[in-house]
Length: 392
Image 1 (cartoon, rainbow, N blue to C red):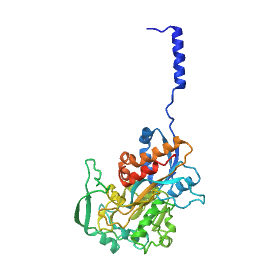
Image 2: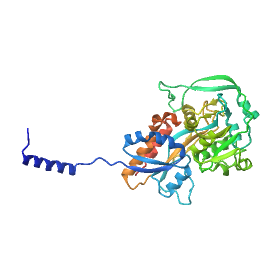
Image 3: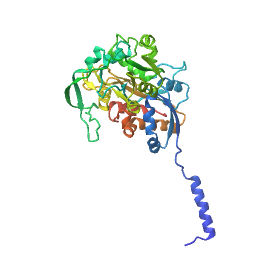
Image 4: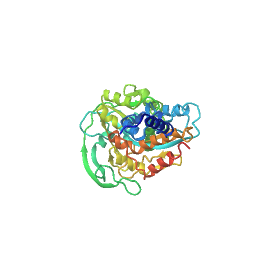
């Protein structure tokens, strides 16, 4: 049936009025975000699904934790990722009064090395500190040989059908069993080339914080709160200056991994996803309990479950924990955000972005080395409590 011309005209006018006054869908928000290079890979891998889920987006400016903190001080960023707490100014400008810490992501620092064998290298946490302090300089040092010629114990964690660690009511991964075995690997008589972060880095700060607790005699000035650090200005400064051939620096997470891949018999510290990207080996670590542990979701989760979480969101890890199966070299990456965004829309977009990356992103990119945080765990509850403050 055809409408008359007058009726059609009237209908068109009414339709136009309805469209003019109908509520429109909220426009997508584009955020300005940057900071720690540690999260660059996972943020990139989650980008498409994050935008599909929230409607919002951001191009991540990967640099360093220190730069992310500076950009919050200058109001350049809407929020920033930082591998250390923002407790002192990076630029001399005051830290924003409304800035809060949201412990958004958790991941292990892997000790990555240029492969020279099919054997898995084992290094005690104490001996790792001695390598980076310049006190162990060859792979066949007797201390390292002892790590790789011994009877070892490993904790096997209970997992569900999807391979995820099963946790108890307190949020701790459940140890299914303990197994023992013997290793007998002769390490090569080659000098160790240490590849370190040359820029101000939260990864460096967290590693040195662990060394400060594990080996305070060699790392007396390491801060328990981590902070952003320049490796060559730390307690390792003398070793760096003494042997610039076997201590070499590179900027960013990608940079140290790439340099390690080019350097024979090298070792570095980095996010574990850079191992596969650069064909590097990942050492297993002997923890304070005497267990040999890999940098896995469950082993990091076991450490985080015992962590102290302050009211301001700052997390303190116990690097010398004797809880079975913990991986000691672990990091909490904070989202630095504000509670007084002038736009409620922006506040909600920041909240959605941080929560999505904390709770959903590890499932989207399971091979990037970031552990899954349960919303019901102590850490998950703190994330939600902090994000609830945004945009008020």
